[in-house]
Length: 224
Image (tube, rainbow, N blue to C red; front, side, top):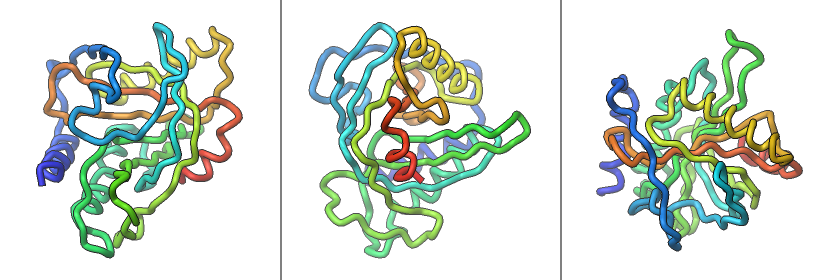
């Protein structure tokens, strides 16, 4: 019940406007088996295979996700639109009528539109807990289950709030660093990963994920 109350608060606050005073900086973790930014929630499992001052290279295991596709012009409304049916799904809108624990991160895949007046394609996803066993089928036809294959991502982090200003800037900064370091990556799409409720004002943690090149086709086809 605590997990569902948290998710409800996230949805309510996602639809509220942000004030300028809500920005803050992120902190870094000390080495631990569970990253600090997962808090009390189960996180999608990964292994850090390399790290520098600007980003990590992470190997993510195959995992089950529940997702919704959204078309919108901007990030924040797309996140709100996608979050709502996913919250309903974990609250019992599935064929088993069961509640499913909230997890982290809330993942948003972004494939930018062809121009400034074109919609972008967003996929909002929740990680399905490993203890869930057989994942129940959604009753909402816009919600679907998918299994992402193992994949390697370049991941950068930033504090404050992920919005239509910070997300493009952070994604551009990461691609600049990857290019400068000679990394090969898929430039056609990227992900944001959020770990905090909107009412959390300090110590926030957000991420940009960019897929290592050579793995794009399998992940893109599985990710909707």
